[in-house]
Amino acid sequence: MSRTILLWGVVLVVLATAGFGGWIFSLPPATAAKAPPVPQAETDAVTAALRPSGRERPLIAVIGINDATETTDYVMPAGILRRANVADVVMLATGPGPVQLYPALEVEPDMTVAEFDAAHSEGADYVIVPAMSRDDDPAALAWIRSQAEKGSRIIGVCAGAKVVAAAGLLDGKRATTHWYYLRELLKRSPTTQYVANRRVVADGNVATTTGISASMPFTLTLIEAIAGRPKADAVARDLGLGQWNLRHASDAFALTRPFATTVLTNRIALWNHEELGIRLRSGMDEVSLALVADAWSRTYRSMVTTLADTAPSVLTANGIRIVPDRVTKDWPEGRYVTTFPDQRPATALDRSLEAIAARYGEPTTDVVAMQLEYPRAR
Image 1 (cartoon, rainbow, N blue to C red):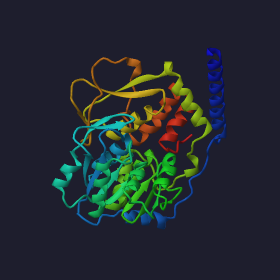
Image 2 (cartoon, rainbow, N blue to C red; image 1 turned 120 degrees about the vertical axis):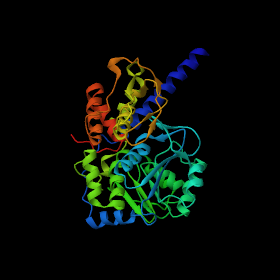
Image 3 (cartoon, helix red, strand yellow; image 1 turned 135 degrees about the horizontal axis):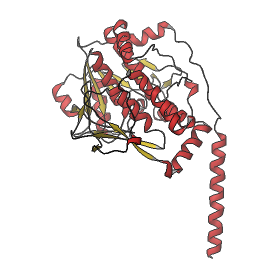
Image 4 (cartoon, rainbow, N blue to C red; image 1 turned 60 degrees about the vertical axis):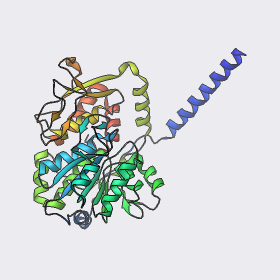
């Protein structure tokens, strides 16, 4: 009997392996595409749709759920908008306590959504909705709907579009989202009209973006809508970004055979996994921090831990309070990663990808860029 059970166990393993292998080989071998031009009239229409219609100095709320909100989606828009100083920016949480970001960082929000409502009963001019681990958080959905009813423009960044869809605000509208979650979004909101090859799509009082790295061009687009193109260009130069626009090559991002095999290989090689440290320092740039922590935590070989000497939280250059994962001065010298404090924030992702390639190889770097939906320069 035991030999029969063992035989059936072997058969099942073989069949499962064959099925998985068949799925791997059914995936496309690679992706390549060029971003088509975007007519100027369309770019102008997106900017016009985002122009403020309320306060002279807009109030912008960035909402997160406490247990898992995407790192760059939450930190980058707030950091860049505060850097630009064109609006009042408030970072919110659905409940008390810090916001645990994924795949890295922990942030102390400015207030809860309930406290925001008590202080601003008229609502925000803009609500930025990052990707969240759950699309059905009742507190988040109820608050987003209430803000929309008060006239707020709702902006779903990356897979935050799924949260906006779950709130019922994308029905019948044109939209985009992170490539990996497009099918889920359309299943949740079947009347949504997907728009390819655009990093930002606006329809009425709702806007959406493609994947994580779209946070920067989207935020610059919003700054242009609020304060004009010269101001947005000045902020872009300050960030170190030579050019920015709505162009995007959607077909360049997909679940491919190299992506799947690299993820699988990295995940099962447990002996190659490592924990890397980022030293938090008062006044550090939060955009660089978010990009570096996000990238290094998506290799399937490394996770980032933030370190501080004593402080319960560290205040970044533009007033974001980062809670360290560990309070310690002791960390192996070879397991630090830099946030490139001597360079402009827009270069931090490219420099991180170069460092990841040097440490883990090009296939892993491509996996990171694909997750970030980042059009990596070769």
